Amino acid sequence: MSRVVLVTGGNRGIGLACALEFSAAGHKVAITCRGETPEEVANAGILSVSCDVTNSAEVDAAFSAVEEQLGPIEILVANAGITRDGLVLRMSDEDFINVLDTNLTGTFRVCRRAVKTMMRGRWGRIVLISSIAGRIGQTGQANYSASKAGLIGLGRSLAKEFASRNITVNVVAPGPIITDMTAALTADQQAAYAEAVPLGRLGEVSEVAATVAFLASEDAGFITGAVLPVDGGLFMG
Image 1 (cartoon, rainbow, N blue to C red):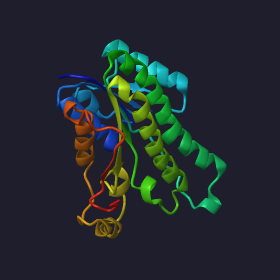
Image 2: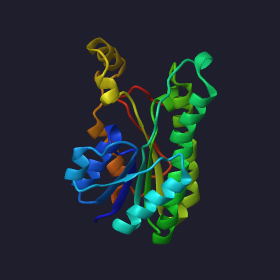
Image 3: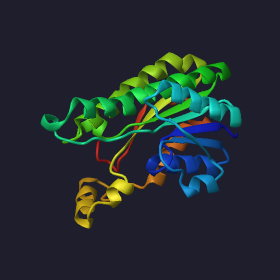
Image 4: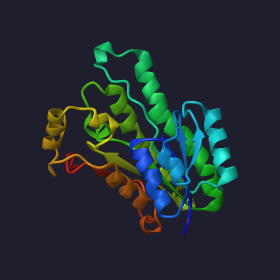
């Protein structure tokens, strides 16, 4: 069954992989982004809308644009996020607040907007993209780790609030994944990351996307409030 899907921050990395996965499965897909739209998005017939998730008015406008062109959003993948890394003693208030506002409060904004139509349709799937950093912490990423840990509490609260309306909310927590960021590392650095993973390698964005697609499927209708690691066994808890 074809659904209307919105992936925030869908212009690269995990978000782009998710958008392409849903599109290949026959869904009507839109992404939000703040930069240029990749060629793969246009080639796949995916709708791209500009949106800064730190701005509630832009969030509402983006949702309205998708609804007008594709229909009510039934699946939301909240992936938009930023990093502003630095040790705590050197981290400014602005760097901490901006990361929280984008990664955590921004996700709250898009979820709040999405559930309005999902409740009317009495069906919905929301998947929040967290990180292993939100579960074990990370040196130099106190702001990012805090934002990603907050997504777990947010997701589980939403899962309880909207379960009666047949809306599931789950969290995916990727470990070290091959993205533009990790591709820029040296071979030795990548090897060091891979060595820490029990499976002995870095993950692929397609593996995260496949997990997200499952959680958004009809088959996952009895799963809600879950935190699903895609980390090669790096965090077992």
